[in-house]
Image 1 (cartoon, one colour):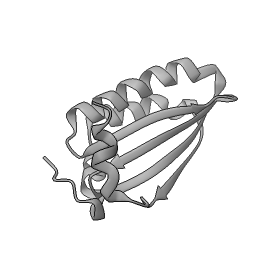
Image 2: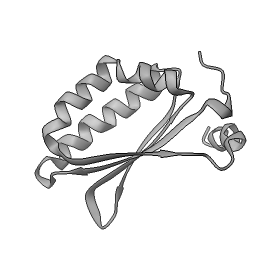
Image 3: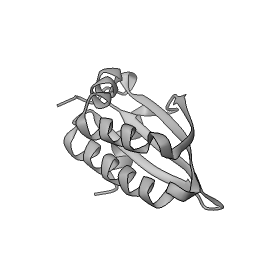
Image 4: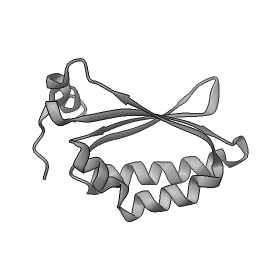
Length: 115
């Protein structure tokens, strides 16, 4: 299991536009992938899918990994590979925006409140 070290944390926003005709299918696959990633991968802290209320096919994912190694391991999992290959024709655009936490030391407190 990864010990949480705030200075090593990897945070990003994935900005995805899905073709409207594939939206329901895409969301089903995405929900399963996010849930599985958090449940079975110790280095995946959160994958939190959202959509813009006024444009439901504009998806955003908050992704937080314990470190870059956890992210690299995530990319090799069967559930991520299935998500990527199954949704590839559904995605119109994808941008991965690297983020930096303003107060990474607060992260354990933030997630503890969800229990």
